[in-house]
Length: 306
Image 1: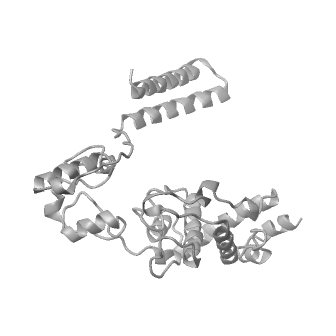
Image 2: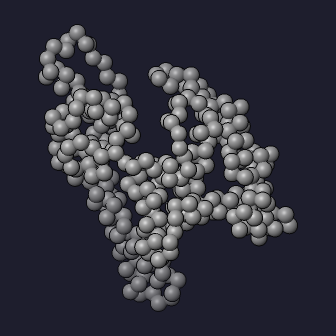
């Protein structure tokens, strides 16, 4: 029996148990449990019915350039990379496929220029299809970072500077808002997502009738983040808990990432900048009364000072 079949059998068993509980037990709490079991079982069976492609472990591929004589030789090498080291097949397909998560690459060379294909491989976030099943030149997403107050040029890869700290803070406000509004973070978000924060504001307006702006939604996220932080502070959690795994402070070995690490000094400097931007006490990482008052959370400040 395959793993998927076993999981499906378990799902059916969970549903069956839930049905038995609903049929033969009259107590309210067990009946609630039975109903939940049926819902979870149906959800599991639905998820297991979606075609999935097994993840392929990266393998080392070596090619002798001297043996590449024809375009067909190049195609053979490309096929090997596509299905192995490159792991392209995890998301893309060559021809229609129900399990493909990303654009169908069949005939891609005739649809797009060589320069654009190269850019897509080296800078995959440069352009993204709004509807990737359409042929023709891709449409780039509108510039969304400015909506959340992040502007300026792209930052260097190997630095942890003020611009990146600002991005982290502002994007945290955005994601905190998404949790508050209770929408999916794979669909809505501040950057690469299908819908941006401006479109989220339109959705909230349509549902509630309130003339909500992106700035107001960001403020909601900021309020939530500050309340979360204040709760932690009340429970004795301070800046000393804001750490990274030790493996990130150990230099990587090999490849383009050789020697890259985040030092404890860099992290502590970034934390100083983050806390100052957030309006928190730099020494403790706790929201200040001034910040909490600004957010209409004076009652939270009162609890911290009690």
